Image (tube, rainbow, N blue to C red; front, side, top):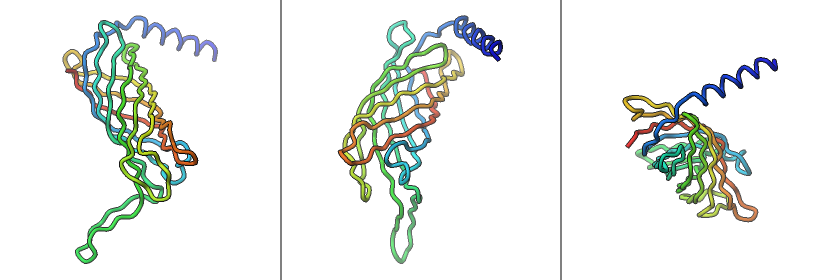
Length: 191
């Protein structure tokens, strides 16, 4: 077993050591994520969904890029959410959705096509949910790790796969935090 681990470590090191670092270009990406809630709202809001857009600007000739991101994060109630319309009774809805808009800035560091990213900013609560105490604005930190596939001439098109954790840091005293462990897919375009 030790030999297998040693061989895998040597191969991994050789791959990343021998792979030439690409020149980074500005990129725009749009994507979505899916994950499980973490924290005090896990039983009532177990599922989180993300839609996001981001701009990535490389710093000089390094493998480091500045990232700006925004989007929507939705947490769906355990009993689901439905909306319907009847010509007799009008529209009806059942279930709750907690909706947030994050606005973040961060850094992404590439090791070949593998990347590590850390973003920080604010999360704005768009809707109130029955029976919960939620701040309208909360500090937001999002660490993630991922892999960027590049296609086409000079890697103009891409697909980024990442996993991370979205943490809202300022829940009110005795209130609820809406945190999310997620997996995300984003389609990117070199600018």
